[in-house]
Image 1 (cartoon, rainbow over the protein chains, first blue to last red):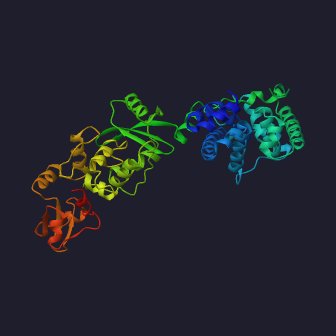
Image 2 (cartoon, each protein chain N blue to C red):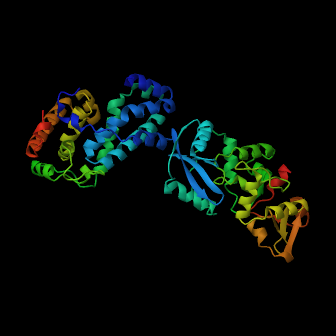
Image 3 (cartoon, rainbow over the protein chains, first blue to last red):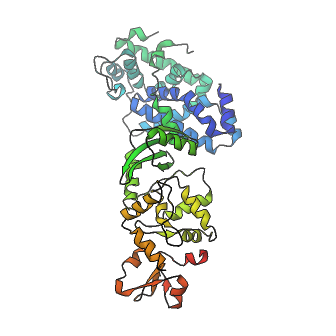
Length: 192
Length: 260
């Protein structure tokens, strides 16, 4: 079902249609949150909180407003805002390339948390994820939304309230930084 | 798809429980888990809005199926209640009225909810007649409807419908395992159900004190601390008032007059 049809169902009856929304979007909400926060624990909390907030917002919106919602960018906006709130006051990710490269060799423990995650068995994707989590936020968030969640630049502009040209430049710069960091961390095979 | 395949390896699947967690949190699905209590294992259903059901059942699947049929919501079995749900229930069952329990009573009528909210005011170890609830909620003639609403109480023990007895003073029916259970629960709260019924049959519907000239329901804490030498039983509030007694402001026995 496409999002326009889903928005119409939600406008008709939130309680019967909301489960369809959850099942269709929980995966991408989690994926965005995981790669923006770099933490499995934070990602689960953010994804759950985002969908709960979506339900409460939809419950308060008039039906005509729900029908006009663009669900993909709307949900992404909620997820990104919650990721930002979570990081406010906490230590910010590194903002220069040097700690970024170091992070490849010594990734943040939280980014790799998991029952079987040991230093030896960290797989390459997790290490790349740790590098991504250490990109400065203004590059990391557009890269995640464009290249992991596959939003268009027009949708990115809605989510991040910035001109498309600015976002294209940030995505380009973010990918370039990530390539440098991945090469330095010996992850060349993951770089296209 | 994305024009840059570099990040496709980063799409980790979401944990399977995440979607259910969301649906439970917003109240579109419930979880149900066992809770050990003095009267046996209770099955408790809850969601993000509050506790939705308390039931005795032979096992989890039976409890969940019953709750699904009544609530219309998918019900997922869990191993145990979270402490945030279990702890206030256990405190309240032990008589701690300060324990706050959020209840999810969607789908029930305003009248039913009003009856249950009034029953929540009856203290541990005390009973009130159906007619008292009817009068207190401003529907003095709806005594039978009060009894029906209490019979449909989805959260027995949490909403203490076992503390509501018949207007003639007999203990009456109970939804959670029948009238025998009601007597057992009241006995566990320190009451003597047989003694209460015997006294009611003798016509002792209210108890006054000849020192304060205040008259109460027999199980009101103020009635129970009146010593035997000063205890004066009455058949009705009118009897008491003609002898110069006034109604207790805590248990409010005036209310029953309108319903009697």
